[in-house]
Structures are given as C-alpha cells and as structure tokens.
Image (cartoon, rainbow, N blue to C red; front, side):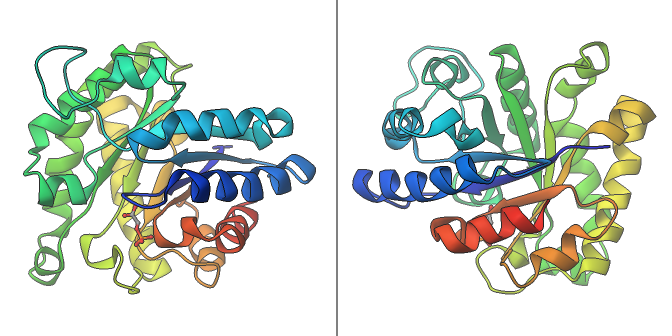
Length: 260
Ligand code: PGA
C-alpha cells in the first residue's frame, strides 16, 4: 500500500517566532499521537530552514516531521545570485524539495524543461522531489487539461526514469490545478480522482507499472479540514500539498488526521 504524504507549503509566510510556534504545536501533538500511515513534511522559506530544523530538535522524535525546500536551482553551485542549490538544501537538513510549483512557473517563468532539471538536481543531491503539475482554468475549460498535464509530467519526470533502478528513492507527484490554488475553490473529488488516475497511467508508461503504483500522487489547491476526507477517500489520491491551511496548526493537524 502507498504511504500517504501531507506537505505544508508555507510559501513566503511567517517570521521566525511564528515558525517556531507553529512547528511546536504541530510536532508536540504528533509526538503524542503519531500519524499512523502518513508522512508529514514542512516547506518553510529558505531563511527559516535552520530555525525550523532547530525547533524539530525540541520535539520528541521530531514529531515525525521532515523538512523540505520550496525550490532549488538546477545546478549545485555557482554564480546564481539569490538562488539556493539542492546541495545547500541537503546540507541544511532537507529531505525533500518542491519543483515546478505553479507560483514558480507563473511568477518566475519556469519552463517544463527547467522543472525537469530541478527534479534531476534534487535526486542528484539525495533529496526526494515533489514535482508539481497543474492546468489553468482556461486550459481546463477549453478541454486541454490532460494535454497540459501530460506535457508537464513528461518533462518533470524525465529524470525520474532513473528511479526504476533505485526503488528505495522517495519521490512524489503533486496535482495542483492553478484555478484551485489559494482561491477557496477545490477540485471535486471526482475531478481530482479522474486526473490522478490519468497521471497514474502516465507514470506507468514512464516508470513501469510497479513504480507507478508505489509513487504517491498528492492533491493541492484549497485543501481544508472540510474537503480533505472526501478527497483522500479516492483511490488515487495519496495525500496533500497544503498552502493556506498549513499555517493554522489545528487545520493542518486535522488534514493530517484525515489522511490516516
Ligand atoms: P493553497 O495552496 O492550499 O493555499 O490553495 C496550495 C499550494 O499552492 O501548494
């Protein structure tokens, strides 16, 4: 059975004191009552990584929490002002890295090809990538959603093909419809399941059936305690990439609990 994964993407939010408070509230609760089959990863902004890592140390067994970077440069070092490399993320204690979040694609013009190189950089540095894909409202309304998702997934996962030979390496795909991110509008469970099923089929083609069955596909886009139970009940939804609700410890814990 696929292990579930819930990721909290803090985006450009929280100051150090707020971050420590949030980590403690989530971690202390999970240390007492661990999530049974769900892994939990936090994605703070780069300047908070060290603070959050230190806060983990004050929680029994880290509360089972792991750390991830919201983005990474495709190269491991060099003259790239303002960027952070996979090597630096790993050195800062990260186990995971997001690649191709739609806010990076939109705000920073990231291409499919660049996202693929970022996934490769994560794997090269021992980080588990979460490759994000998602269509815009216009693309869904004009019937092009699956074509866009296929193009994005093929590019993002070109590097993941190596995973077939490395069954122990963790990775995940996140389906995040752009029209659902931060809008309060969520994909219905039926739409999300249909899309995840499509993505699973594509993974099988790219990575083989066995690896495709084992790879978690997360849903992201206005996930809340209210809609998480119906979404996770779908057979191809294996967890969540959570933005706004991840900043509220009660809501985030409730989404983790809903995931099992
Ligand atoms: P949201 O963000 O939960 O605030 O919609 C999700 C994401 O961007 O990962």
